[in-house]
Image 1 (cartoon, rainbow, N blue to C red):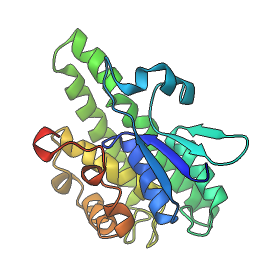
Image 2 (cartoon, rainbow, N blue to C red):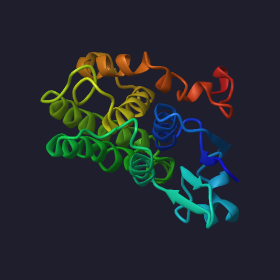
Image 3 (cartoon, helix red, strand yellow):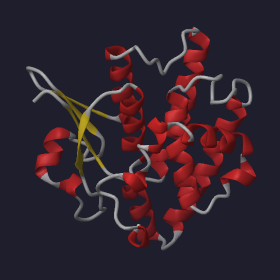
Image 4 (tube, rainbow, N blue to C red):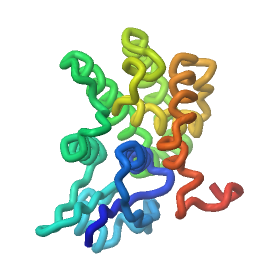
Length: 221
């Protein structure tokens, strides 16, 4: 095996972030689809649990001996940054690097865990419809905080005029917010402008969920 292998799901925001990074860094990877479902998804099968004990996506298999598997998108992206620094996704300035990581964690810790299929399904089981309301709430709170911090650093992108990890986390999260019924352009025009700037880049366009091999037809999405 001499290629990276990315185990993921077409609409997983965590997998999406890694796809963007691979594209930006020009890294070739085989993509293996892991269909997610709260009750009988591929992530629950023993063979996937052997790759990712949390039974989540993504998981990145690194070629070589011994074989290495890295899970959790933040860890994967930090590793790619260290192994392939030629297209940097973290600023050189230490305070701006900290700001990028701060923005990353607003999404990674403050929003995403509240919208994943497991918690929303469990909340819905207790109170039908409450899972969606909870996910929408945490998107609004988190993205408002994200926008407030970006107001201090934004150029074309979240932190200046170069793409950083913050943009890789923002774009999938805005997609998710729209799925929860939030009008992103109306609430956070600055974030919408950054999303548009990212969307004009080929690396972002090729990572979009709807163009992935495991994406269902539009009428079934």
